[in-house]
Image 1 (cartoon, one colour):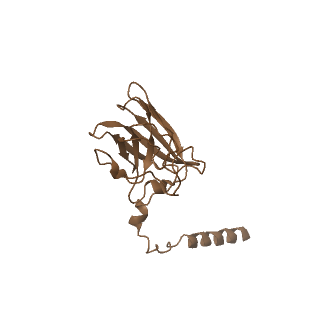
Image 2 (cartoon, helix red, strand yellow):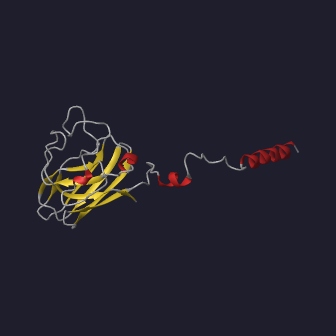
Image 3 (cartoon, one colour):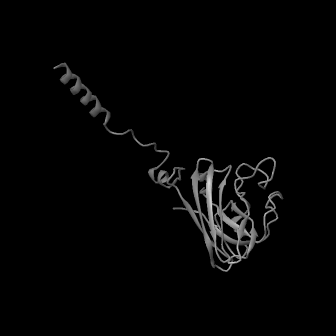
Length: 187
């Protein structure tokens, strides 16, 4: 009988705990919460690269990782050789020069370059090597930025430059004109 009374008491307490939820915080509407990105393992951002004349030039994916943001870049139809590739601070790719993407993504105000003794900024990446067939791939984990920052209110873009990045000249590695650009969007 004691066991039955204890079980019934536990059931009453459990049902009471399942009552109405607390009212939602009125400062954060549900619609805002649904559009605010969070860095979980299922998040993904993609960008379709275009050349200044609007030709497709490849695809970029960004996923949060334990050490930063994993960027996977696959390009086609670009000139052979080494090219600077960086995340830029604004998600806008207006041709023909793509300057609308503004400067490199640099939320911690670091100097440019993987070889900078003070450390790289968040948008720095190794050079992209493009083969004679116009294709190339690069996978790199960005350091120093968050996935939420990548997809902030003005977004961000991945830009491929005409020349190689020397990995030390501030602010852009002396990598030349912008030859391909893609805006990151949450997927």
